[in-house]
Length: 626
Image 1 (cartoon, rainbow, N blue to C red):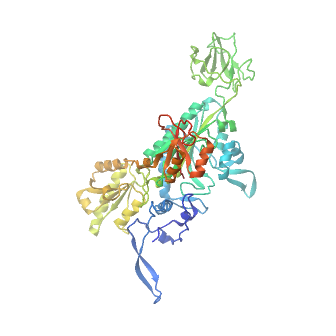
Image 2: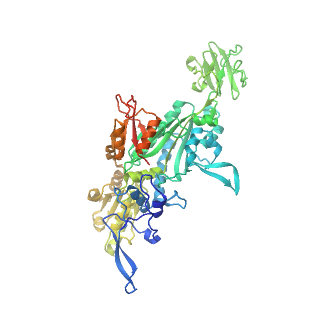
Image 3: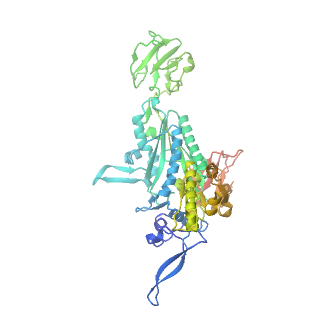
C-alpha cells in the first residue's frame, strides 16, 4: 500500500528540489488518525465491503500498511510524513501556512526556555513591537527595502477604507525598532540598549516547506545598540556563539559557524554571521544568523546619542579653580567660545596644565583645549593626572550614530531537528528538547497482574518527575504494547521504560533508547530504587548524541570543476575563494549551490582561489540549501 500522507502538506508545501506529487485522497477523519507504523509491520483492520455477487455486506480482514516513506526513497515525502504522523503540524487554510500542533509547539517552547535564560544572562530584556510597520519605514534603508520587497505582505485597507499609507506585515523589525530607539536613546548612558522579542513574521514565500519556509513563522529577534563599533562586533559574535552552543549541546545538531559572503549578507547589514547545519539529505540549512548592522539603520533613522554631551571645545577660564563649583556653562553652538551641549553642564575651572569638566559627578581632564570625546573617559573619576585625556573626535563635530546588531533563530530549527535526526521509524528528538523524555509502558496479560504493574509504573513515574524528567505513562488497554512501542518511537521519545510482572517481582525495569535501534538499545535489570533509577535515566538523557558522519560529506576542492563534481554528488564543497560577486552568482546559476559561509575555523598556509587562481585568504563552503 502507499505511504500515509498528510494531503494538504503534500499539496500546499512544495520543495524546490523535489518533484511536486499529486495530493493523496483526503481520508475520513477516523481513518486519518489511525496509527501509522513502520515497515515491516502492518495492522489488521476490520473493513466492511460491498460484495458485487450477492450484494450483502461481508466483514473481512484486510491488511493496510500505514508507513512512513523511507528516507532514502524520497526525502521530501519522508519529511512530510513524519510531520503528519508525529502530529507536529497541520496545514492552514491559506496556501503556504501551517498550524503548529501541541507536540510541535512544545519543541519550540523548549527552545524558547533555553534561549530566554541565555538572553537574560547576557543582559537582554524581552519586549514586543507592533506587527504592522509603515511602508515608509521600510523605504528608509535602501538595501533593506530592495532585499525584502518581493516578500512583503502589505495592508492597504483598514476599517473598510483605503489607508493613507500602506502597512507592512512584519517581515523583520529593524525599521520599527530603530524608530523607537531614536526616542529612547539620548545619552551614552542609555547604551548599550539590548532587547529581544518573540514574535511572528510574515514573508510571502513562493516555494514553501513546513517549518523550513512558510508564509508565517515564529522566531526570536534580538536588537541592540552600542556606543562603539567594537562593542557591536563583540555582541554579534557573542550571539552566534550562543546559537552554536545551542545547536551542539541542546539540539545535537553539528553546525559550521562562519561569515556570510557579501551576496548572502542580510539586507542592510555590514556583516552577517551564520550557523550552517547539514540535513539528512546533505543539503545545508541556515539555522541561525547574527548581523552586525554597523550604522546603516541608525543613519537611516537618525538614531543618535549625545555620547559625551556631544562635542566639546574647552577654553581657558582663568577666574575659576578646580574642585570649586561656580555655576553652569549653558549649551552653545559656538565652539569658539564654549562647549556644544544638549543639556546644562557643571564646570570646574582651570588647574594648569589641564581643563576639567564635570557632569553628574563624573569628571574629565584634558591636557589642552580641543575637541574631545568624553565617552572614553572613566565615569566618576576625579581628575588627578592626564591619564583621563580622551580621544579627539573628527573635525566636523557631528553627533554619533549608534552601532547596532540584530540576530534571530526561528521555528526553522524544529525542521532542522526533524531532518537531522529522524529515520524510517519517524521522529527522533534530542533529549533536552523532547516534550516527553520518557514514556512508561506497563505490560500485563492477566487481570490479576494489572494492579501490581500499574502501581509500580506510577511509582517509577513519581521518581522520575521528582528528578525533573518529563515522563508519561501509557496505561491504556485499547492498544497492545507492541503498538505503543512503535507509536512512541515514531513520536521520537528518547527513552522507553517497560514494566511487566517479572520486573515488578525483581524490582527492576527495562529501558530502551530511541537513538539505538533494536536489541542493542535495550537494557534489562535497571533497579527501581529511586536514587539509582533517577541517576541512570538522567545520565542517559544527558548523553547528547554526536553525529560525526556528516564530516564525510564535506569535500575539499581546488578547482571549479571539482566544485561542480562535488555538488553534483550532493556534497558540500570547501575550497579557497577570493573571487567576486559575479563568480559567486555564476556558481549558483550553474550548480544550484550557494556560498554558505567562510568558516571561522580556517586552514593555515597559502591558498589559491579555486575559481580565479588568485591568492586567497580564506576557504569557503558551497552547498545546495533549503
